[in-house]
Length: 220
Image (cartoon, rainbow, N blue to C red; front, side, top):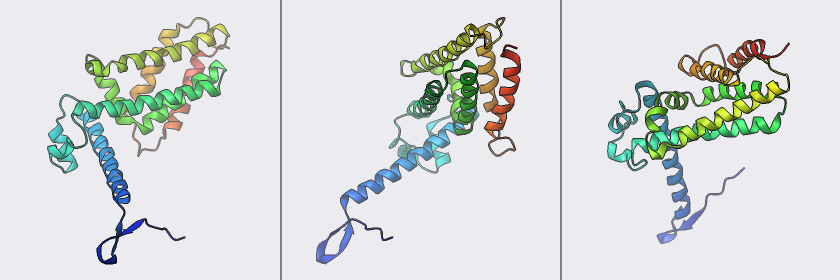
């Protein structure tokens, strides 16, 4: 297959890429650079903390000057904002998809656990930042959504647990809020020891957790 490259004639009949082609390549390169910088920042924020990480350190690790980094982001707050929003938006979409595709409370809980573990595989650094920095960042208006999304996630889990209790799917002696906190803390703290290059995939870990969870909360 022949790929046709858009060109236009320059002086003396020479050819050169069109302005649109050059702009597209520049935009693609800029986007790739942004993603690279965000990945570096996420790793540093997760490892040493948001406050302890400076723009200069991020730039040094990326092999660029601080001024060059400001070409892409106006502050490290903008960087952590984008990192967190990317994860949280993805998680909300995953939860919504589970709720659309499943109605049985037991199945919903299982799938919510499963997609949460898959997020650990895809957003390990972002989740660590969310856990470690939410309390500090939530002091600022820009990050007020962190508390809102946390409350939204909690409502999702509690509604399913309460639905299961009413339907007799889950044990009647369970406190929904305690069950939710147990699931939340058990699942998300995995981010601190999970090794993406290790023997266990996030699906394998999820299956083990689901077995333990169901043995504890499912009515017999």
